[in-house]
Length: 171
Image 1 (cartoon, helix red, strand yellow):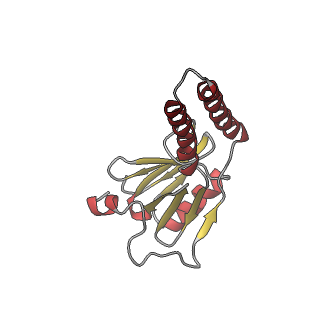
Image 2 (tube, one colour):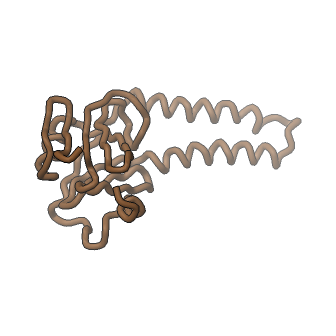
């Protein structure tokens, strides 16, 4: 991936706005993973309650502890909800909360089915790992991985579609 395209990875290059050709890809959501994240948030707040209610702790410290816990939960939610993917004419749009990424088809070298890992925006451990020129890897979780890989192969217009993914001809 060139330096210029890496700098613009968070948004499409000029002239590549959302068009009628943009196709949304439903994201896979594992409810157990969402429940685990919610349990962690509740657990964090449960640890804060005794500190916030303790008379021996000065009120500025209590307020700071509550603010930090609430801020942590809010920050994590703001970068993970919602998770959306879409194909457009020139690449893949990824949204995770307020973060937005753009992966140009020209930069893609490989896409593989994977399970596990936490390298990218998704609420599932059943993912597709997208490898780009320059060694960058992003994992996403389309609801139907095989349909996603078929559509990717068709849209990129080059490469080989195998049983476990897609590979560019020049990879």
